[in-house]
Amino acid sequence: MTNPPNLVPYHQVTPTAFPTTFLMPPKLSTTISSTKKAQVAKKAALKGTHAKKALKVRTSTTFRRPKTLRLPRKPRVARKSVQHLPRLDHFRILVSPLNTESAMKKIEENNTLVFIVDIKANKRQIKEAIKKMYDVEALRINTLIRPDGTKKAYIKLTPDVDALDVANKENWFYLDT
Image (cartoon, rainbow, N blue to C red; front, side, top):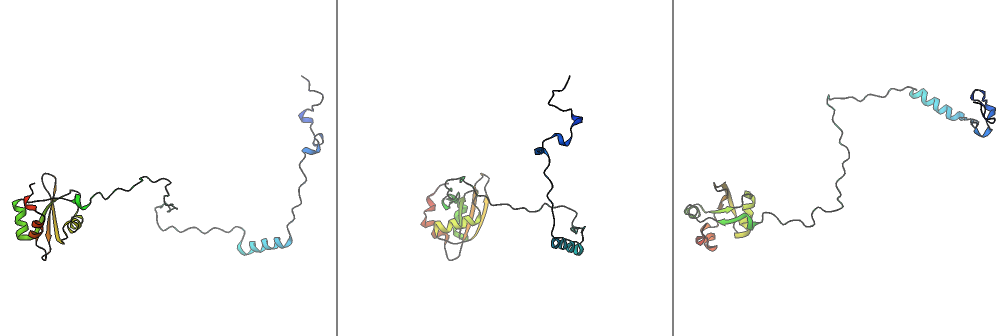
């Protein structure tokens, strides 16, 4: 097989065989001013050319990941359009007064009201609910969970308020539980 007349074999190629457009452009003479050279030499003389970086002293054997930047959330859409009302308001906390014989004895002798309250209510919430509903201050509250699963609260009132008056005002003696 013979080469076409216009092609030259690879081993016969010389730099002059190519047009001048394909040759590398001549290198630009990069001359650094003498003042710049002097500044570089001064820096090298003062600091040295191969300065060793100071090692960080580690005082612990365990590696702790650094606390990086954590931006606060900025949701574009609210998850809830309307916030719910308080789940335990004072009407739900105080379910009903208890008017058994032992409860009446507590009212008369110990100045203590007895209530069935919501199972999730704590003593502070019960105290606030009594204050809102009956305008009386509770001195102390004892709670227990009855065998039927409801919570009972013994609400000891301050000495200036009579528990019997509060019970009479609310007509508790006619309630059946």
